[in-house]
Image (cartoon, rainbow, N blue to C red; front, top):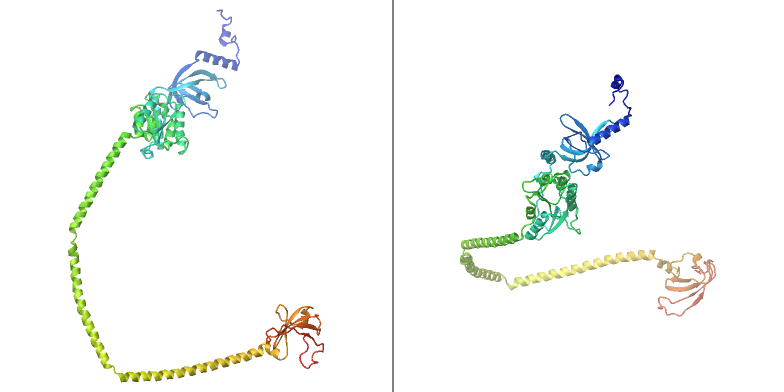
Length: 501
C-alpha cells in the first residue's frame, strides 16, 4: 500500500471520499444486515404499550447495561405463540437493521418466546393474580354438574388417545350422547380455537338441530408447560368463566395445572376421570336404585309396624263398649219409669179439672147467654143496614151533582137546544166552512142521531149540499136513505138556528 504524500492531509481526511447522508445510512444498514443477518437476542421487554393503530408493535429489549429498539410487524404479531408483555424476559429471534429516518438500529422480531420455564412461571403467576383479583376463581361462581346429562360436549383434539379413552369411558359407564368440537390443543392459534369452541357450545339453542350440551369437558393429554400454555391464555380463561354450561377441565396429568383449571366448575386429574365425573355409571345406578328400593320397603315396614303398635296401645287404653253404654242405659231406664208415672198423674189431674168445670156448667145460664147474644146480633144487623142506606144516599147525591155539571158542560146540552155537530171523514170536528171542499163526506150529529152528507160546493157560506142518511141510532141503521135539500133562507128567517149548509 502506498503512503499518502501529505501526512497532515491524511489525518484531516482531505483525501477521503465524500458520502451523502442517504449513502452513508444505506452503507451502515447493509453492513449491519450482512454482519448480523439473523440473531437470537435475550433481554427484558421495556416500553411495551400494545399494538399500534397500524397493528405493528414497537418497544425495546434491554439488560442491565444496554438497550436496543425492537419492532414486530402486524403479520408476524398475529402468528406469535407468546404475546409480548411489559417486563417479560424473552428470547427474540430476528434480523438487525437500521431505521435511516432516525439513525437508529433495531431488531425486526420474527419469533418470540419466554426466556426459560422460570419466565413462564412468573408470567403464569402474574396472570393468576390478575384473574383472582377480578373474581374469576370465586367458589360462589362454580356451577353444579348435572346428575344425568343427556348431551356431553367435548373440546379437544379429534386425534389422539384422549378422545378415544373418553368415548370408551362413556360407552362403558352411561349411554350419553357425545358431541366433539375438534380444536388444536397446542401451537399457534390453538387458544383462539379453544375459546371459540367453548363459546360455540354455549351459543347453541336448546331446541336446535345440534342439541345444546348439559356439561362441557375441555381435555388435553399431559405435556410441558410450553405445550399446555394455550390453556393459560386470557382468551381461554375468560371464555371458560363466561360459560353458562357447567365446565370440567381435564388438561394434563394430575400434577399439571393451568389457569383454566382454576376458573372451571370442576377440575379432573385426567381426561378419563372427567368422563367418569360427567356421567354416572349405569351399573352403579342400578345398584343404587335397588338399595333405595330396599330402604324404602324397610322404611315402610318400620312405619307400618310403629303405627300398628301405637294403634294397639291406643286400643288398650280405650274403655269397653259395654262400659260406655252402661250408664246411659241406666239413665234411660230411670227416665222410662218416671215417664210412665208422670203420664198417669197428668191424666188424673186433667180428669179432675174437667169434672170440676163440667160441674160448674148448667143449661139455664147457657140459654140466657145465647138469648143475649141473639139480641145483640139483631141490633148490630139493624145498625149496619141503616149505615149502608145512609152511605148509598150520600153517594147518590154526589153522583147526581156530578151528572148535572157534566150535562151543563157537555156538548149534548148544546145539541138539545137545536144545534148540530159537523165532523169530517177523519172524525175531526169542522169549525169553518172554508175547510170543506166539494165532494167531502160530512158526519152531522144531532141530539137524536147522526147522518152522513156530501158537500156540493165549498168555501161559500149558505151553499147547498146533498146528504145521504145511513140511519139514526134509534132505527139501528136500517132506515131507507133520504135525500134532502138545504134551505137557502138567511140565518134567522125560520125563527131558530140557521142552515148549516
